[in-house]
Image (tube, rainbow, N blue to C red):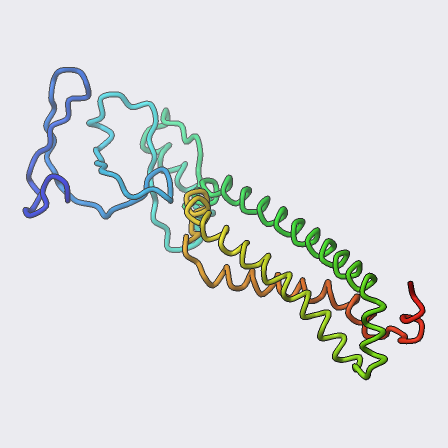
Length: 238
């Protein structure tokens, strides 16, 4: 009604429908319903109208909505009985609650979300293994340097912080690049998954904190090993 009667009362007015047959049929407006998403939860509500099934020119199927005050799953038998009492030749092909219908519409998107989560966890695990390997290799190459530092009076805690500082710097670069890419691709993700906002900074922040924690956990073992280096043995290492 916002399109055709934006500033007037539509009740009692008529709309003409041609149906592509050349003859225009006029129908009186007897009520106005709220905006609703009919086929897709992501799309904006489209212009639509409802007619009594007895006035429909060609009727091959119809959908009826029943409002229930209790558990709707127990009403299937009662609804079939009412339809059969009205006309025994009308078949009730299917019965679904609104929640089941919404779950059915969101099933592909939830599958995409599950696969994305699985690949994300796999990528996080591979990144943790890679960061551990890089840190362990770096510590192995700097064993002599670490030994000299400790021989000159550096404490184990200082060596531990030094290695972890390098891990944090490396992780910060990766997290910053990842956040920039995620914000750049957010519009695409929003168009593919229902209920996901393009600028969800909370989700991005939580993901960044998780990645930072994974990075610290990956670098902790090599850092602990570096803090326990024997200076004498390290200085003898070629």
